[in-house]
Amino acid sequence: MGGLQAAWSIMSMVTLTPFFAFLFSIVFMASIGKSFGVRRLYVNLLVKIFEFGRQNIESVRKQQFANITQSDPEDEDAPTGDNPSPDTADTGDGTGSAKTNGTLPNGGSHRYMNGRDTSSHIANGGNTVISRAESLILSPEMIDDTRSKSAEPQEEGAGGGTRDQGEEGDEETKSDGSEGGGEHEAAGFKLSNCLDYVKSGMEAIIEDQVTSRFLAEELKNWNLLTRTNRQYEFISWRLTVIWMIGFLIRYFILMPMRVLICFIGVVYCVIGFAFVGMIPTYRLRRAMNDIVFKHTFRMITRSISGVVRFHHPEYKPKNCGFCVANHTTPIDIAILSTDCTYSLIGQRHGGFLGVLQRALARASPHIWFERAEAKDRILVAKRLKEHVTDPKNPPILIFPEGTCINNTSVMQFKKGSFEVGGVIYPVAIKYDPRFGDAFWNSSRYSMMQYLFLMMTSWAIVCDVWYLPPMERQEGESAIDFANRVKRVIADQGGLVDLVWDGQLKRSKPKKEWKEKQQEKFSKLLKGE
Image (cartoon, rainbow, N blue to C red; front, side):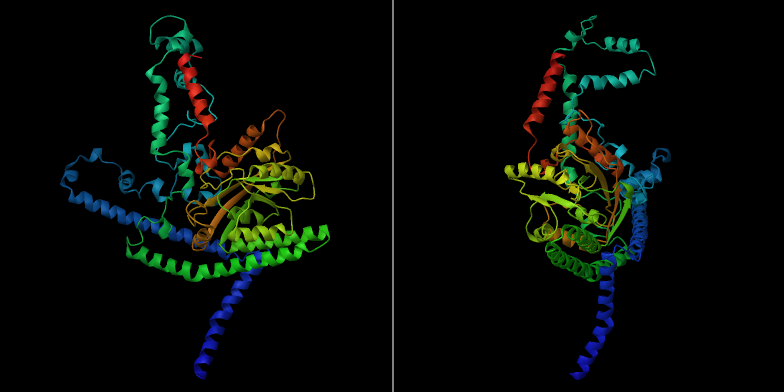
């Protein structure tokens, strides 16, 4: 027995001591905001492994396609001039094209880490089943006449012709053949009047713009995770070996270490903010709160192997203002709080998030409210005005969408925070889904299930852009101001700018939207 105990003690010294030394070195470097560069090397290695996997999958698929064509005598006798190119042929099984293998014309395989995503200039981000026009007729804020839209291509297609030519072309297409009386000819029902509505309805049946924003973003490459696989882990022995090694590393090395780091961060948060809350002097309490706040969220970010790149630090939010960002996950707060101290506002939660909320409230002013209570909304607006009028208060971090979106688009901003006044500091956040899907589908996963998925992912990699501060212009409504801020965030983050309310995730469309479309269609029939 004595020999076994001695062997066990030696084994623990050899294994556990280096492990805990490495663990606490990570915690210490996280607390001071420094890094050895290991995470970036790790991410670069993952990119090379993903690329190897893509090439392996493509080679196997090409071989399978070649075997199918060789076994089909009709294909062998077909004329070669009508055959698609090799790149087009690979799209038959969904892996060989540029859209599915992750290699985009603009270097899309590295688009999130190397600069802005250009998908904002493509309708719906270019990652959809169907291709819609930029402006949909069935949108809640659409006010332009349908007939005016259909006339624009005719005027542009005249090859630079005069306005009189365009008018003559319109007269030639009149249904009754009469001269003059334009308004009277437009009146009455025509089958073509409803075609735009039919088209929009069919597009919504195939793929609507709302529900697709609450599903995980479809990857163009397989990232060796079973939750995103296309049954590729057994497509070849090479990928099988890589997948098994990755599984062991993620679940038996990375996850235990990440759980310990997160636990240390939460304990530090609870104890640290409790001590900060007991400091009587405001200036000292504010300074200590800044330290504990950043230390806490840096450790939480390291617990998910977060790799964050901040751009334009000169536009970092300042006191008594609003920091407005697009919302993908509760981790957004941890990501942004590694670089700046904020006052937080949001729905009151229980469980794990509730522990953090109560700890944070002990040391600095935060605003927690119940979403379902209308009285709280009035109180929130009042507290927001009081907060921004005090120059000593830190900026308030707000996610105006009110719910998590899958980081492919930005949905309608609530106007409440834009009515209060004060400076708005827009921030755009773009996650790289190849290493881990940061989107929290709250209707499918609980917070603990979501954290488990995050800690068993490869990493959380994202870019954060601080944008120039914005103020409400004279005569500008709160809704217009909110839309202007949303547009800036969408353009910088490479996200699709949508007019739909994110609360459609939980509720039906507003009755006013239906009535607006009905009124518009009635005006079209009357020729107004």
